[in-house]
Amino acid sequence: MSRYCQISIASSDSYDSLVSLIPAMVSEFNFWKSNIDALNLCQCLITNPPEVMSIFGDASSTGCGSFIKGMDIIAAKMFSQAERDAHSTWRDLENINFTLKDFLPFVKDRTVKFFVNNLACATITSNGSMKLLCQKIALEIFETCSKSRVSLSLEWIPRDKNKEADYLSRLSDILDTDDWGITPEFFKILNSRFGPFSVNCFWSTPRIRKLISSTPYSIRLAPPG
Image 1 (spheres, rainbow, N blue to C red):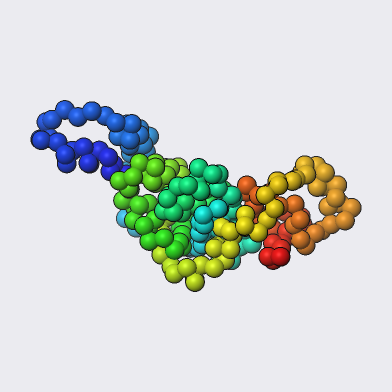
Image 2 (cartoon, rainbow, N blue to C red):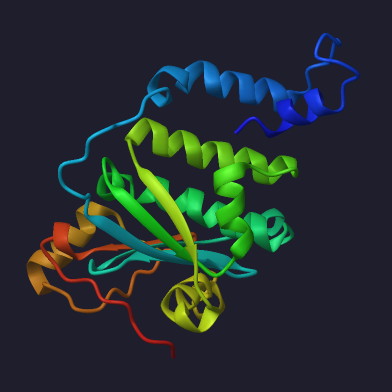
């Protein structure tokens, strides 16, 4: 996570040369200043192999979405116009970044394998990127994992093996773009009178999330159409 510092060193005439600090280099310095003590260690003995949590995610041109395998939980959101105009690799990285933060209560202190169908994401999250925007998200992902003690690895899978996540990433193509909603208090009244519910009719297009295991009612995704 020191890609721009390494570039500066490699392009210098000698190790004693003076260099100008660009914002990307300052960001890398600040990252290591905050995290070097926590990351400068290695566990030598592991008595029990950690249980691996599998997350499948994908990003389309309009949104992104992910789900935890074996748990009835999803996270999805629509992209802004600026995000839609960004590179596809950036959108996939943003999905990883968004998903980890949204799933933080579930992934904290866990070993996570994130399945994506963008091969570049696996390399960037491990080694960083020459592109400033991708490098910035890679640092955010790394910092989230460091602070929450998440052991993250990425694995590429073909798109036809990632159909559920692909569907979640395209929800904005299916849902109405008018964002309607009700307050949690009013929902409790409806739930006490008519619940528990089996279908969630109150979609939130910028962000969709279902937490069946932690709610007194059952929220199910409606099929397309």
